[in-house]
Length: 124
Image (cartoon, rainbow, N blue to C red):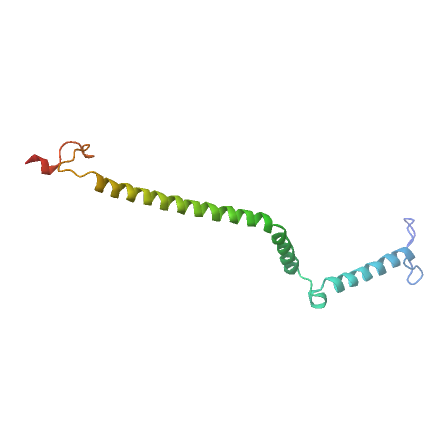
């Protein structure tokens, strides 16, 4: 071992690791073991999917009031649409029956057909 550059090399067995580094190293090992114990699914049963399902369940439980109002509004809208459709059909058939009973005549005059001109029967 040469001393020409002024750097002294460590002699085997004489220098020990500083006590602070030893404490930090042991603390790291202990934290690692605690982490493994707390977050291993085989030991604790904790999983990311289980956590996600719990959060989704909590969200749905909190939002039931909003969802209930939206579903009720949709049900009312569908019921009103069906009711108005039935009412219009009923009015249409009632007015048709009333016209058939009220207007009795031999000849009816009406507007020309969509094609314009006379119908084929009137050309005789």
